Length: 358
Ligand code: GDP
Ligand code: MG
Image (cartoon, rainbow, N blue to C red; front, top):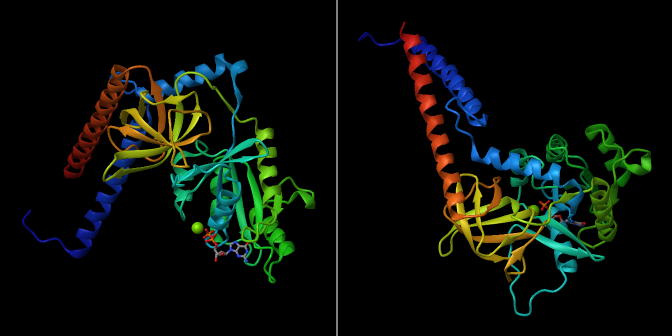
């Protein structure tokens, strides 16, 4: 005591601390992911999850098809934005007269009388998002590969995320209008680097050559999306309280907390109470991707929601609840659980420090 530490001693202590912190982190993670902790406190989110699981089992024959939710992923500059813009500009049917089309992070198209919802994730955010919420938001991934550049690192990364989330992949080979486009070479790379064998090569990966810029092949791509959706049997329970996924959230200077959700089941109505992550709210207003106020949002509809108490986490699940009381109770339970986790961390850290002193 009182003696200065040598450099190597200090380094050793620092390393021990880091190991310690890792242990603490792991312990905290375990307690966070446990639905019922030792004091018998149940995570209300797990209860809702369980409720929906049971509902799906009981109402199996009442489940109906819903529109597919699609995310376009791929290497930077391979054409994600151009493809989304092309689809949006040419196929979003009636824009409100005088209405401003606003970006709420998702939009819906009507193709041959059937709806498709596209999630518009700026830049690389799509990757972290996919990781965070697994297959919750997306039913189908369109993996875009530029035919003049081939399979690149982010193509592989995107592919891995889609695969891990167990989401079906359609490959769009883009920029086929370019003189140096090489579709054959791109397919070879698909096989060699992704282990994806195109259908016309005897494999089972639907592969559509397109030009997002010239609008070539887009109809085929949309048809393939609908085909895959049909094969996947993407279902929902259309009645009753809503369930949805938050895909975007922010604190707006004027509007307060706002979030975009894609509704997966049931109906969300203006005036409904809801919970999401560790917050709750009452739907004050809902805005669709055309900037129009809507009173009701149903399965696969993207909708911006006003009325959150706090900004919800981006990947959290929104559940409609019957009463304000129910919503409040949920949040209280959530807060209690969070405090418990923090307490646990402290005790563990103290124990560990004691052990170090001995
Ligand atoms: P992102 O980074 O994946 O969103 O890629 P962008 O959509 O921003 O496209 C990157 C660049 O490639 C832009 O200059 C686009 O105009 C161009 N581009 C995208 N699709 C095509 C295409 O089909 N043909 C050609 N010639 N250029 C394209
Ligand atoms: Mg882009």
